[in-house]
Image (tube, rainbow, N blue to C red):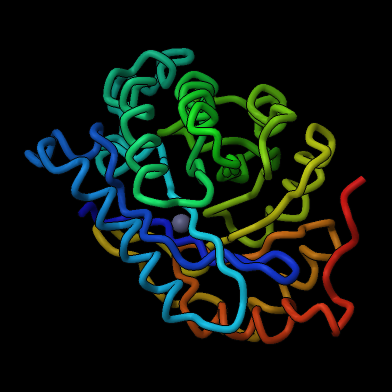
Length: 277
Ligand SMILES: [Zn+2]
């Protein structure tokens, strides 16, 4: 498995989506590591682990999301000189292709995933391919994008995984009405409120957040970020900005999720957000 993973733990009103192991299991990530023959095995094992976790989590409905991301060697080592070319992310063959996403989507669906979560979708080219491949399974599809704060204060997209588009332009191009949800992921908490507002301008369905806490220092995530109670305070503000799905990405652990669940996920508290629209 590769070093940087995006674990999604979310809930929405009375149902929850359990943590899924989103360490990259697409062919674009595994083949350069000499593991191309094990793509099917890796995806099936990941879903099976999540299904087993669901069985252990009695007492509430749980959905299992199968993740497909843009993760490939570029995420670890950068894009090099190609990063300077306009829309290079759409052309760079190191990113997963439509065929790669189709292979993984079929594996995840076959293994029993209830929905497909598309993560780190930072460019229109492979983003559209991922949406197409995921939609072909017939499962609900969530789109997740990681916004970054540019030096000029505007909201942008990951410079290595994207094409230099503004966050708003990328959302405009990818957030199609047939998606089941659009979420902000793997983002600093202080960009989330603005990002939610941008998504809401372009998408009428459920929106959500799973932010990060701490920081990346290759090859590991540094867990020095918000405490569970501090993260809950942020989550409260995201709910007030319309988020209906809340979870955690890098640096957000089981204790954070427990506090979120105890505080936000009980319908009786009246703290779930109203229906979209
Ligand atoms: Zn993350």
